[in-house]
Image 1 (tube, rainbow, N blue to C red):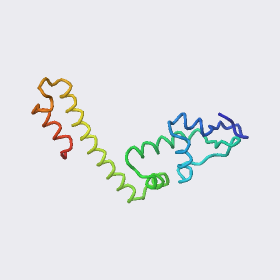
Image 2 (tube, rainbow, N blue to C red; image 1 turned 90 degrees about the vertical axis):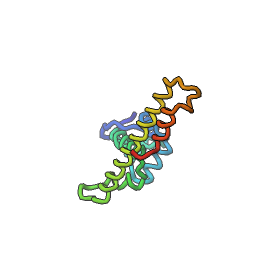
Image 3 (cartoon, helix red, strand yellow; image 1 turned 45 degrees about the horizontal axis):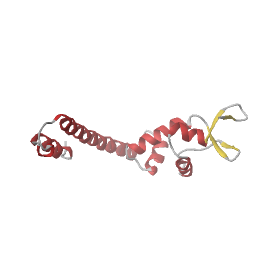
Length: 138
């Protein structure tokens, strides 16, 4: 941690990487794509304001949800009237609902397998049905 001339606390790239779990190369990539911006340098190391951690949390969340870097960049600049982006977000929410339902079915099949006494397990009719349902539409 360092301070700027105005005594603002700054984080260097290593500290940001450690706090977020992101590699410094990912931070440099996000910077190159305009998703984050350093405040300057402390020697050879980039420095960032602490609020970059929140922004990186949002970026990580959006990446986990399946948004592309271009979509995230657009999202970070979005205004309430951006109907195309809102539609994409609604589509992504539906995709996540489907994935959550699929993961729930997968969990249920594993819960059954954990207590099933059928020999062999893979021939258990309940287990077979559960596995078949994992990728079935909800």
